[in-house]
Length: 128
Ligand SMILES: [Zn+2]
Image (tube, rainbow, N blue to C red):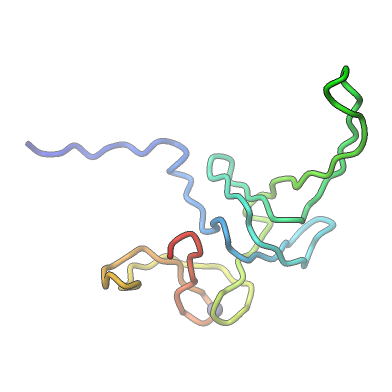
């Protein structure tokens, strides 16, 4: 029986070129030009959270006896269009293209991200 092509769920249709563990440069806002590591990628919303950057101080009121009031610091998600991936090979902030190349120990073709500047495969730290 022929297998029907499955429709991708919406959140997968919005595929991002930036993943957890990537080193990125922030392009906008008060942390512009700062470099950080992606601690979470949020493909559903097209955003990323960068470790220790884009911190917003939130003032919270005490709530009963369970929560103390005060200021908490929270890393806010940034839109992927406001960050640029730093290439693991040449160290430049770059846009990426996707290609199928033979990489890794299994000698099979994978969809990989390629640096637009040095044309080398950008390391994927979520895969090892
Ligand atoms: Zn490069």
